[in-house]
Image (tube, rainbow, N blue to C red; front, top):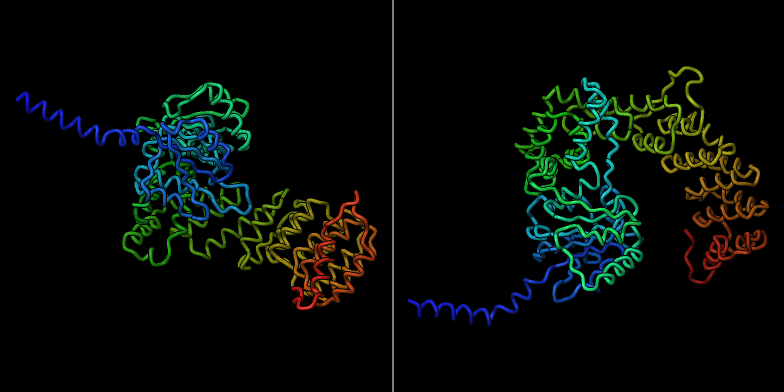
Length: 566
């Protein structure tokens, strides 16, 4: 018996000697996963100071490959530590500041990985997360829905104090801040480091990490407890630390709700059933999930809508008159027109409004908008965008008391967006008298409603050319530069303005129009000669400006074999 036992121990010991050391070495090392969307400085600092015998580094981003996170899932990568180096927009996306880079990471994708079980192992063993981006752990609410929800609670009979208390609980439960969203995504992670506001740039963060590591010799990470020395090193930048939500967390239900939308294993019918359940709670919960609800309902194509499960859930929601009444009341009370539009779009998508009824609701909203004493660029863009197909033409508020509506560029532009030919003429004729804010409004309007009539464009060009040289004339020319000009009369008038003006800034603005224009109507060699003869010196003696670029383009067009400029 004893001999048999010794024999078994000997066999096990021999097996350990043969197979054990390589496996133990591999198992003992912790995997540091890096998502390097922007600067590599942070990753390089960690890899420079952490010993290879204890840590191995795996870069998850594969340049030029949009599905790199899914690729890491298929490769069965399992991370102990995660380092994310990227700019963060404060709500939805990690991105690069390099214009040529298309690499990025959406929060939606992180939620799917966290909830779906489609990527087992990638983040399941995480012990620490480092988020090197601005506002990654900002505790402030994201959606701006707070005031709306408080008003809704007060209308239901709660005191302002009780409404505020309930709002704070809703915010924390439903990931209404960047910090809470990260806690939901990286659930059960003991330490999540990030920044409550502005984060240091990559080189600065890298240098800070180098000093931190050198100050303590060989360091270890992923110890599952806050590193006060690291927080101290980044104290000037406001680094903070939190932990992922656990099952015992009082707000764990908020993560479960988030996963109802993010889990790829759930069908559209199941998700719609959850939306209906959500609508039975206080409306503030549905409001905080508005982005997710809208993405879901907007994704339902005709084929999906015809499937039995989806059709049944949509019918159940459409029949819910109580939920419909609350939703539309909330929409009509919303003080944020873009939010109101989104609420009305969802109401249409779930069968509470027909397309004609939604259009009537939008028209009423736009009439109310025109009564606001102050309008801005966002209002002009909203009105023009909603009426892109001209279905809301005529939604102009003509019932206002005299003097109740400021007769400024923004109000005029909104009415023009809604089909008022009179206000379009007034807006364009008033270019000469607009201040900088008014000119920005007009430029925004012209992006949506460019001038296509040759006579209108000629008259506008003549009006601009007749303005005194100065900032106002330059701004007016910049508004005209949004157009591709091909009319010979307009081009000739601009060339004369270039020759006659005493302002370099005006000449530069004219060149900005001509370089984008159809110059086939002009003699290239003659135009280049006129530009050289009349150009004014640049302030400070600078060169290689847009006028030089225009002259060079004209000269190249005259070379043998060159194609006509378009």
